Amino acid sequence: MQKDDKMKVLVTGGAGYIGSHVVRQLGEAGHDIVVIDNLSTGHEWAITYGRLEKGDLADVDFIDRVFSKENFEAVLHFAANIVVPESVSNPLKYYGNNTRNTLNLLTMIQKHKIPYLVFSSTAAVYGMPDVKEIAEDTPLNPINPYGASKMMSERMIQDLAFATGLNYTILRYFNVAGADLKSRIGQATPEATHLIKVACECVQGIRSGMKVFGTDYATRDGTCIRDYIHVDDLASAHIAALDHMKKGGGSNIFNCGYGRGFTVKEVIETVKRLSGKDFPVEETVRRDGDPDALTARNERIRTTLGWTPQYDNLDTIVKSALDWEAEWQRRKSV
Ligand code: UFG
Image 1 (cartoon, rainbow, N blue to C red):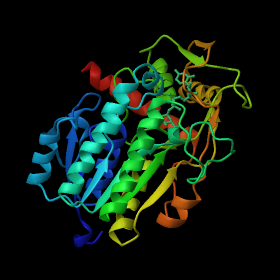
Image 2 (cartoon, helix red, strand yellow; image 1 turned 45 degrees about the horizontal axis):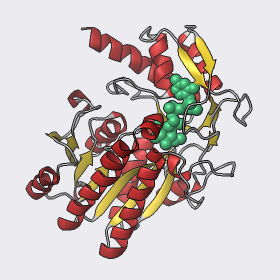
Image 3 (cartoon, rainbow, N blue to C red; image 1 turned 120 degrees about the vertical axis):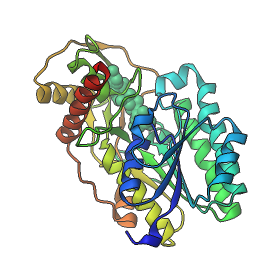
Image 4 (spheres, rainbow, N blue to C red; image 1 turned 45 degrees about the vertical axis):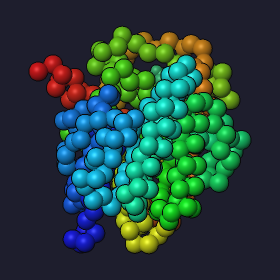
């Protein structure tokens, strides 16, 4: 990267799972990084480049102070709650921390005239679309408050961009999984609910077993299909998005997935095969808010950003998650 390609960037949620992988790649590319994180689910050790401003996006004065001190050229906005069933039982937590806090951040982006924004959105904005592969122009129809909270944020960003000339890239993540291949960082969220993380905790003996939520979905084995994408491939999409905007590429929305899906049962079998460990798996009723199948069409990000995944392999994803889980348990025990 050329020297003048270096940017001063704000990363909200940079101590979290996905944010920390992006911070590492931004740091390696030479960008100057400030992280805002309230450390509610993230960890300070996970910020491997740049510096932390500890605080909450609900606190507008705090955000204003950070923006006033620094001359940011770009904002990458990860900070959010992300657990689908929790959003069903506690919707206002999601409309507060996700939608309202995005409004707070956008207010500062407008006030301080920040030209570039990368926003973490989600496949959950599509709801339960009636198509085999989801394209970016598939109508948005979220079936849970989490997806709705992100859809509303997307809309605010687009409206602000129309009014001010802000350049944005909205990245709609499918199921992010795996960890840094060197196990320097990984998912360390307390009480994680995500499938691969939960299965890896079973391997480590942190949990005595796990559940399969629903075996009567309209899929090949009755369990939900998801498009699992390695977190470092997702991270590289953010770097490519920033580069593209900086070169004048304008605003875009991209799906981030590999375009193929695995069932819950296939994922659990892969974890058992690669770890060589068996653990109890109970088949139980459906979980609230789960669509049958979500797989991405990803031609747009491939052609527009030249994004080429490097880890499109379930074994690679699961192996990195298993390695990280072993490392994380080792760190916690010393
Ligand atoms: N599942 C189980 N048992 C578990 C955990 C999960 O059967 O212990 C199942 C779920 O019911 C679902 C699938 O595994 O069918 C994947 O569930 P996750 O909780 O891992 O992920 P979600 O699909 O609910 O959600 C994730 C992100 C969202 C994103 C979505 C997009 O959390 O941000 O992927 O596909 F929107």
